[in-house]
Length: 308
Image 1 (cartoon, one colour):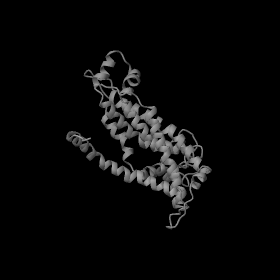
Image 2 (cartoon, helix red, strand yellow; image 1 turned 180 degrees about the vertical axis):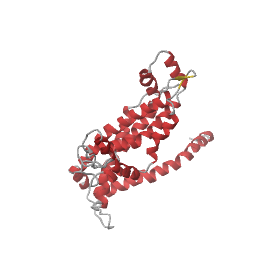
Image 3 (cartoon, one colour; image 1 turned 135 degrees about the vertical axis):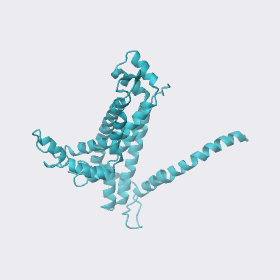
Image 4 (spheres, helix red, strand yellow; image 1 turned 90 degrees about the vertical axis):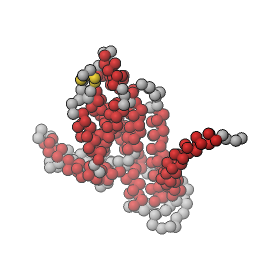
């Protein structure tokens, strides 16, 4: 069976564009994860080329590890809170920036100074996580000299141990993550709303749609694909938070492992206890959870594309 020249030319053109990103994907994602899985089957300590294969012993130890399960529970809590709150805030601000200013010259517009607000919201995104950590160390100090506690003291509230109270520490870190990340999604959702023809919103407004209806019945369905992408990004971010926990938490994951997360435990197990085989088993478990979340999210949130 001979393949015609136009078909060869067509698929050769497609392959020329796919081969480079596919090669990069294999080199920087597939290959390292396969190596990590191979290392997870050993008792490697990372300081000697000599190691022995121990089969699935590391995974059996992992499933009996209380610290591992504490980190998994923290990720599940973060996964429930971080995407929902961040997306809700970002959608609200994006709607105000694009459509919250009323009608001007017969067209719906954003609030006054919407361009300036985009820059303000996005600013935390350009800060390095280390800078954010140093900044919030000053804001969240547990004594009366902390910026937040100082403000609370003005209304008669005693200092709060935001990062030293095991019941508050994790939620405080999630709040910092929301503060840092929400600006990116404001810009992302604003771009999605700006791509929708203004005539769609104006027609709905002429038909009597209020702000509530305009947001939930018109805007949200039209930018749903963008929201879906944001949800996946934030879900993946919920399985990280290494840098924030490393810079802000007490004793790196404390107090009493109340803020520990899997990337931190992977780093600690590998570079403090020199159990590279065991840390690789944690890494494999983390990759499995991230891929499972992404696949389920894309499946559950899939909707038919709305053409306009």
